[in-house]
Image (tube, rainbow, N blue to C red; front, top):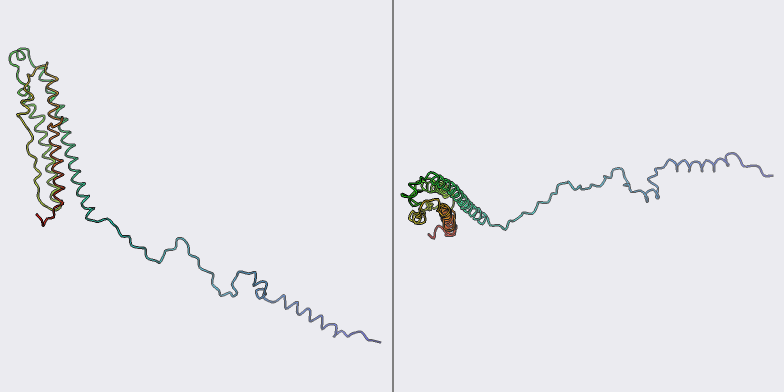
Length: 238
């Protein structure tokens, strides 16, 4: 008759199974093959995380040098040309403004003289308009126009001191006052019947084509053009 197994024989397999289960539960899960296969973490704790460059991070590469195709001498030439043309335009404006104001003031003087002319003077001692208006023409036209041109000539001379090539150019405008022309154009009798004709002649001689203001503008334009052309001549070739 067979005897039952002893308690020691039964306990050995049981203890062996329990030991394997206990060892499995106590091992590091990171050592398992399936864990290493599915995990994206580094194998060791000492591994450093990767560095990512941000958009705001400064670049260590030097920036390429920008080379300009513009000649600095051309820029200086354009600046000089712009200053000369600005002076010309300012001269045109000031002269035209002075002539317009003179024409307005002189027209008022014509009305004043006609209103104060008595009947006896009108019938017996009527004078040419040039003689009646001679003093007013001098005060209202010639003196203001001369003052305006002198101011502009002084402004030009001041600029000539700084403009290359530092050559002194004559900025004095010749006298454009043609008294004989004024006397001939205003030779008509100074009467109320000739009022419109007198005012028309005054306006034409001041503001019309080839009038006093137009002659001044033409001088400024020609002087500016000639002065710009002279800058193209090299100093050592003069």
